[in-house]
Amino acid sequence: MRHAPWHSELRAARLERRFERMEHRLERRRVGRWAGPHPVPLAVFIALLQVFGTRAAAYGSTAHELDQTGYLLLIAGPAALLLRQKAPLLALAGALSATVAYFAHPYPNGPGFIAAIVAVFSALSAGFRWLTWIGVVAAYTTFAVLVAPHASVARLVAIGVWCIIIAFFGEAARVRGMRYAQMARDRAHQEALARAEEEKARKEQQRRQASDERLLIARELHDVIGHHLSLINVQAGVGLHLMDEQPEQARVALTAIKHASAEALKETRAVLAGLNPGEAAPRTPRRAWRTFRASPARRAAPACR
Image (cartoon, rainbow, N blue to C red; front, side, top):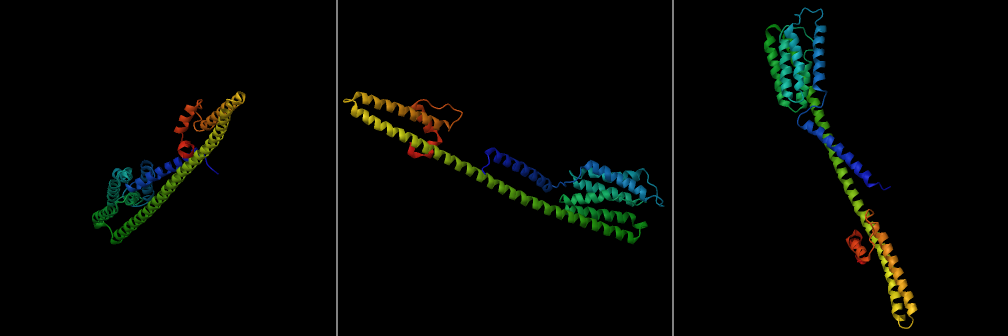
């Protein structure tokens, strides 16, 4: 089944838009943009989770109550996540600093480290691998120095192990993101090749159809002109032979020549009108010949010149 030209053009346009969207997503991954939730709702959600989660965890404990500084530190980490997409390293530094400052004070334990975990994942996904590891090590070292006088070794070791586990999970997410990005690039490349092949096949089909149409028009013109010119040639010979002896018969021959030439011109106009449907058909032999010389049918059929 042969599709209309507009159908192929519409499909090619859809593939072009799809390819552009895929290239845009790949470009965002390449420059270090982690495709995730919007920064503002995520920061608000993590801030509420850290504040109310810490208050719930501190219920009935003997730790110091949260004061204004404690609340500010719990909110400062999520606030740093607002820069997660534009500046992942600044978001990492802000979240780690707020987390270390909070847990270095004798505030209640709770989920006050969620912002730091999100910042670590964001920085690793953005491609800042070694700087993220250095930031995590520096944050843990600072925390260990600050709480060493009044903290047990088991707690410091446990926190260090959890930092390593979180960093390794971030590495796994980064590797998975790279694998997905490579798969997306391969898929985009295959679609681009398929689109190019389809475009090439469509143009080749159009050229083949145009060539077939020109050949058909050339054959029709050859048949029309050849038949009527043969008839005109025969009638002209009869008229010349009978002009002196039988003038009436010569008149009949000339009348036949007139009708044959008119019929040939009429059929030639009908064939040439198919080349330019929006243009009026030529009504004189000179204009018909000029139109036929400028048409693709003449170039496709040298025998009709």
